[in-house]
Length: 490
Image (cartoon, rainbow, N blue to C red; front, side, top):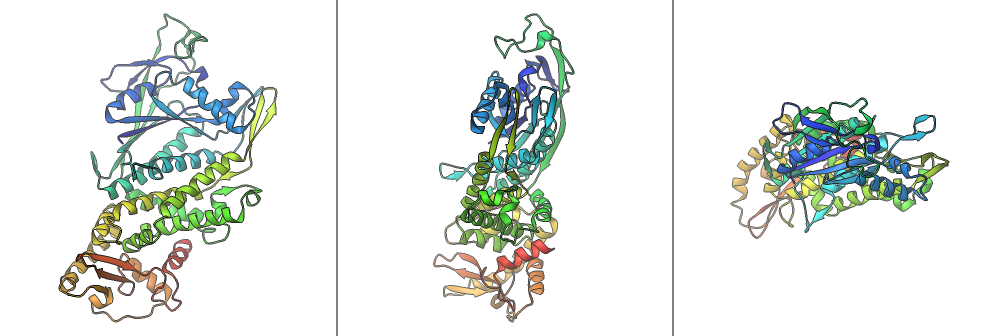
């Protein structure tokens, strides 16, 4: 996949016909009601695909629907009507602005737009398989901010930046080389000059919404500016992990962790005990994945995904469930042209955690190159995703160099079986306090002498084994419990 263009749109009914031209570019201008026509045409040669991000509340242009699902369908049809030849998909997201007789009214949580967008993007890119495999994520993202209203441009750019980082993580694990190096993803943001108010002749024709009302008009010339151009690597995920844990740590270990993803006064009554437990498990798995990656515990991350082969599909299913439950909680209210939506449930920061967990799981699956378990090749692949995190990457290089020296001895062993790092390094096994164990584990990038074992199979391949169920601590606690406790209290 080349470039994914995201274009947040408000209500396109009253837009003006204009000539759009790239600022400082050599391309000809494009006459259209939207700057997306120009951007999509420019990026088409790079394998560009466009998605218009619309609002459900635009469906009220047709009146009061019989249900919220009908409103969403009306909104999608409204946006598709105004695409006017732009080859784009339409995604309908939660809106918060409603047209009343006395003007506009703001109602609802703007976070629902952002959390829905990042969740849908993560599902689209990392949660869907085609021909039995995950497709290569885009090499670049472009965001056309020209027609977004209020919170839409800010939240769209935020989500695009995060998804670009997650895409860089997966691309690096896939070993995809791009224009900016291994796995790196480019992010561009465009914004056009505004039309404060154009002539009536430049509005849409009542007969054909894709042509201007006047035949012989001189459209305004608007320049489309490149307001941001950045290159994002997989190390972006390491930086964002701390923020995600900061806003989720208070509940991630509790029985109400599900409330991080789905909120509302009666949210607990809407979900069954089985559904709450399913969400709790998905959020916990996501936290474990992101914690292992954030702390640079490469052997443990590989072992966890290998042992829990369904972790990726479980997280993806949880995201789909939350989005569907949120959509099903919306009630259409109002009469006589004054309509609003009552959203009984809200989305929360747990949606980000699930999205990040899904991307980390996808990247780790790409690194695991066989069904026999984690290999040194898988370690090397996943290590490359940490290259931008200098300390963590350096630790992995140091530990791998030390391991390679010791493996010269191990390769001469004739029998097949396991050997611990403690045996390989001639170290004495010992018992640790939990704090000392976690400190040593992080300091060695997961290559703890009393936790990691190596196994040589009959083909002579060296596999890595990590005991996640019992640690060499006085409490013998599972490693996943210790990591969750550490990451949510630090």
